[in-house]
Image (cartoon, rainbow, N blue to C red):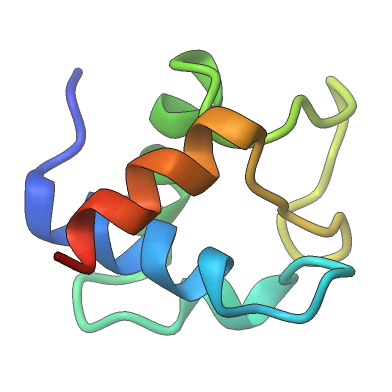
Amino acid sequence: MSTDKELEKEVLTRLLHAHPGGLGKEILDNYRGESAVAEAITDLQSRGLIQDRKADANINTDPIKLTASGVEAAKQFEH
């Protein structure tokens, strides 16, 4: 299932402007709910835009960071 573009833009933009250590559970703060954001993160990771996380990674504790491709994708939303 593909991420809707508005949610994808929000997640990528938040990560682009995040502390270099990445984001944790605060990335889930979205009016669509935690499960929608978690699905978006999984989708973006499968597309190589978010760094691979451990298979048992807990979204509440594992830092979420962009890959180089993710940075480029996020910058496209800023134009």
